[in-house]
Length: 239
Image 1 (tube, rainbow, N blue to C red):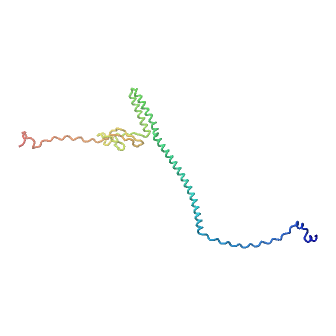
Image 2 (cartoon, rainbow, N blue to C red):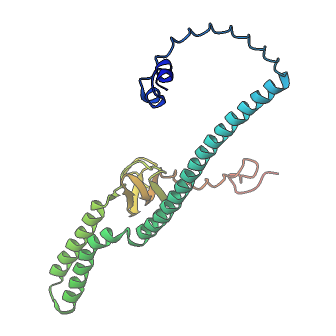
Image 3 (cartoon, helix red, strand yellow):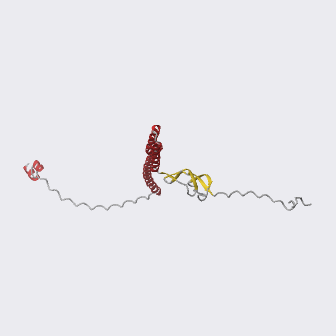
């Protein structure tokens, strides 16, 4: 057994537990085989290329369509808001116009109320006052206040007597023959004219002068008897 162990290099256990045998050197990797050439791609079908182009065009058109629809939606909303704003503006304008028509003369009326008050005072004073001269002065003052209030609002009267007749400012009531002024002038004024901020409100009602007509011709002289009809000196008609 010992001889066997000697020839075998020891006990089997020792051989098993012994140091591992060194591995033989690894053989070099064999050279890679040359790659086989890839098979040529089959030619593309023109229809497939056309289909791909149509798909791309469709996708592009759909994207543009969605973008356009978004813009249209935004513009539509803007238009609706603009229409709503316009309707609101029309309502406000109509309301303001109605208020102006109803209350636009409020300031004018407030300015004329003192005139009415003075007329009331004058009427009350006329019931008991015996001094008519004071009453006359009070009425004159009230009239002046009335005219000043009209002027405050741009209403002015104008006098036309002695001025040339102007059909744009005067309305002829009648004509009067006179030598006091040239013809076609305002001889007398029945009603004064008024303007509002230099715009004619009422023309003046006037009497226009004209040249006096020529005096009537004197009566024709009585006809003298003709020679054949005249009586002879002895009072007898000729034979």
